[in-house]
Structure formats: C-alpha cells, structure tokens
Image 1 (cartoon, rainbow, N blue to C red):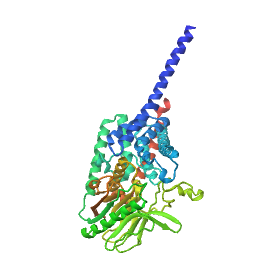
Image 2 (cartoon, rainbow, N blue to C red):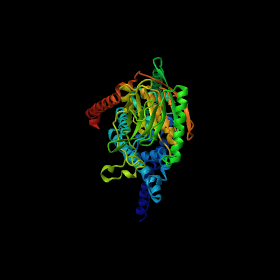
Image 3 (cartoon, rainbow, N blue to C red):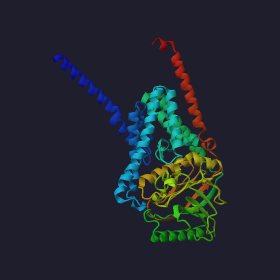
Image 4 (cartoon, helix red, strand yellow):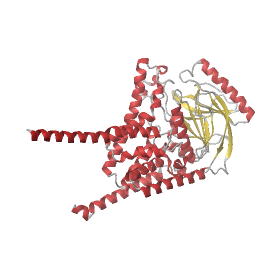
Length: 500
C-alpha cells in the first residue's frame, strides 16, 4: 500500500512539475514577451527591446506563439479603445463598448493565428539551423508587406526601429519594411543561439548599411524646393459635420488662403475628409489640395482632391483604396445593405495606384490617405512611376497620441524607403514635414488648430527599394528555401545520421 501511495505521489509531483514547465513556456512567458513586443513598437520604438521580446519565439510552439501574438496586439493596438462611444455612428450606447472590445479582440485573434502558424512552421523546419531561421525570418517580413495591402494590418516589426534607431531603419531603403523585420528576427535568433561573434557582426553591419542608405538619401543637390500652407483644423470627428464646426473650418481655410497668397505658397493643404461632398474652396489665386468626398456615379469615395487656383470643382483626384473596416466599409455591405452603418454612408475603394500627377510647382505626388500609409510597397511603386514627394492626409480623432506617434513612425519609414520628403497633414495631427532620411524638420502641436508654412524638397533620385520593391526580399526567401532543402537532404544522407 505504501509502495503504491509513494509511487502515486512521485507521479503526481512529476506531473505537477511538467505542468509548471508547460505553463512557464506556454503561459506567462509568451504573454510577457508579447506584451514587451507591443510596448517596444512605436511610439517607444526601441528595437533592442524588441530583439529580447522576439527571442522566445524560436522555442515556442503554436500555443505559445498564439499567446505572444495576441498579447503584442492588445498592447500595441490599445488605442482602438478610444473608439468608444460609437453612438455617433448610429450604434446603440449599450452595444458601443462590447463592439469596440470585440474589434480589438478580433485583431488580437488574427495576430494569434498568424504567429501560431509561424511558430509551428519554425518548429517543423528546425529552429536551430541558420538556414531555416533565415527562411522563417524572411517569410515573416514578406507576410507583413502582403498584409499591409489588406484591411486589418497596421504596424509590425518593420517599424520597430523607429523613432529610436534610424540607422537600423535605413535598411528599408534596400529592402523595405519587410527586410527590416527579417533582420530583427535574425538578430533575435542569434541572441537565442548565443552566437556572439556573428551577432556582433550582423548588428554592426546592419547599422553600417543603414547609415550608408541614409547618407545616400540625404543627397539633395538636385532637389527642388516647395512651399505649402497647411491647415490643421482640430475638429472633433463626432462633431465635425455640425454647422458650427464647418463654419470654423471655412474660416481657417479662408485665413490659410490669404496667408498663402501673402507668403507665396504653391498651395493650401487640408487633411482627410476636410471637405464634405459638394463643398468648394473659395480660392481665386491659390491652389487647394484637400481630403474630401466625391460621388462617382452611384458610389461615394474618400479622396484627395486637387483644386487649381480659381476652380470650384476638383480637376484631379486620388481615391482612397484601402478602406477602414466598419467605419468606411462593411464586409458584404453592397449585398446586405449594411453600408448605412458608416458615418459617411458607405464608401467604395478607388484605384490601387498612389500616383497623383499635378502641374508644377507641385509636381507628381505619392499620396496616402490615413492608414494607407501602412502600405509602403504601393508608395514605392508610385515613386518609381515619377512621384517626387509623398503627401499623406489623415483624420486620427478620436484616437490618442499613441496612434499619432505610430503614424509618424510609419511616415518616417516611408520617407526612408522611398528617399522622398514627406508631408503629413492631420485633422488633430500629426502635421509634420520629414526629409528623405526620416528626420523631422517641423511638427505642429497635437490637438490644436494651426495654419503654418511647410517647406519640403522634390527629389527624383530612386532608392534600391524604389527600383526593385519586393524582388530582393522574394529572391532571398527563395534562395534560403533552396539552401535549407539542400541542407536537410544532406543531413538525411549523412552516414553518421543513418547509423544513429
């Protein structure tokens, strides 16, 4: 009896020990590491903290990866909670907070699924081999690029180097945000494997190449100067279509037009959605570039509108292609007639091209409306097609400063990728001008109405990323896959392995 009792106790103790180990690796550690990753993203932007947060991923299975991904998004996307209350969208007050929480949980669940699949693949490939680690890291980077073309992705590892480490972010001029993400995963793998000499070499080489790319982008000898008058109206989104708010915006626009005439600015620029459908700027001597709405047949579009001086109707426009789920677009809305849930009555996407050709002195623009800024590949394509600078307009109210800082970090990344100066004009911010190295030259105060002069430069020189886009990243992914396959087959044919 004692024998059975002691054996049962030993088995129970061993079982408890096993469960504690499982909880350690599949419980608090994935959650803590994921939360650290979410905190390391912009606005903090400390990549060295991100490397530590990524390190355990090479050991996790799908369960641990899922917890890591969910925790990272819950921390980095907590600004979504500022959507509450949604009553201004017509959502009943009792459903507002549950709907916002559901939206955040859906984003967390999507991240959990993706990271779980990635961790499962890593364990299947064998995480201890350099070739499998390179393939997994490059696959992650390319996946971020592809996700940025869809409706649910906002920010990832590609932006983790900003604003804290611009030299590392300089690698984006070679391979885009996906390459920056892959390099950070490789650094975390070297940390995990404690390969100190190789780790030091990779970190120094990454920063050296990144700094060289920034130096290349800073060459502005052939640049043309451009002066613009920008308006940051700071209108609360929940009230912006009220008569009083619209009158306030008209006064600001009138003042900006008069100041632009006096200053000799080439145009007045307003943020996303500043002009309601049919609204016309009263400008006889200065051109206006404004976010607004237009009707295309029976479809409503959110657009970047170009009004030449003296024109009451837009002569050129760039329609928003990447629409915000729920707020601007509802899945199946065209069939189920759910589009009335949107504050603007339901929108349709425009062309995927981000190029807007305007006459001198404005020149060709690569335009991004709000969170289209997450898609660096499309902006690089527009630059290759002739865009000389980037304009992004946004309305980030009622979101907090955290989202504005993430937006600004992505703007820095887009400027570095493309080697273009970037002007950001937001309703409540960020309103800033960045040079081709991602350096801020001027930024307006958050949540305050402003009219200000912004000076930037038009450039024609192309970065490596402008010319080849994702081709280098895809090529490296294919090469790493081929090498991994060859290495795996070599191991299988090894006499020592067969003997074992």
